[in-house]
Length: 422
Image (cartoon, rainbow, N blue to C red; front, side, top):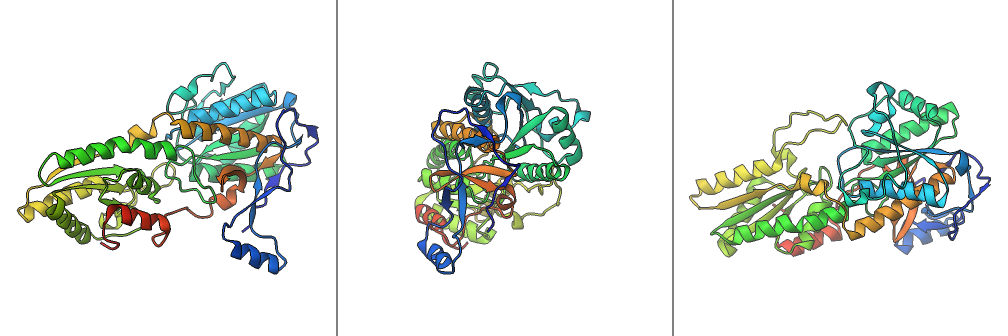
């Protein structure tokens, strides 16, 4: 695995920040298991490791001459405004950068023909934005012409572009960085991984995930009491998770009332689920089912339509299960009282909880430190309690998912009591 970080050139300016500096040789091991480390050392190789994030003593850009840009893309996620605020505050107060532009409505804001005028971002203008959900810059989905976006960066004199978004956004950022490299321009591109599904590789946790899991407690608790309040009650809750079921899994662990957790990584049959649910109702007379939006897609007809970002539009597994559960028990002449709850968009638009607020602040700071040092085509993330630099190419090389034979899924099975195979 290649975790080398690209740089724009030699860092020659003294950093103005009054913080403890990090030397470039500081690393964070990829493996927690000592065996791969020992094997690499025995073969005379350096074990896989990430560059440690943090402020450098020498920086690439002269802050007095620097202009920066921020763009937020994709679906909403708790913490977008927090990250914007952290970047602006760090650039302004720590480095003395006075010109910061917010490009509006995602990558559309980098294409002149859309007519989205960039928003000047100052500490005074964004002082209280962390108190609101969403993003003050707006967002959009879908790729834009890389040449046109790079033209805008040149025209605006941007030295560092901070791209906040998920897999598609980061792929776009990598394409912009490559075009910049091809043109020989001194412009850095720094990614900040934003995916509520927590599915970016080589990053322990993406911002907004903690808030999303916390916010699931209200709908799941509601589903639990609704199911207990009637005979043979079933509370069915659909949560986010297109390809990775981390929110559903951690929501299940955080809410011990869940009896079935369905995620994209673990297939199930409709018959297996319905039989298990029938046994549960016969034994306890109520049940709570949590399903991630991408679970069970093989059970539904797929139209293969795609959204603006190129993602396959998923069929609605929640409504499908709602209808199938009702149909099954009606055919069995068993009365079932089912309540269906889909809180997805309410959760996505929430402001951060305290944990994510602090996390966003630190992510924004480390992104600025990386950009000011001249690093590019990389993102900041956390790994084993440290903030690290990850090449965008590595981060988007594969999707992080729950391992069906891993400890997390074992914990879910133990918490729910559901069959390992359905």
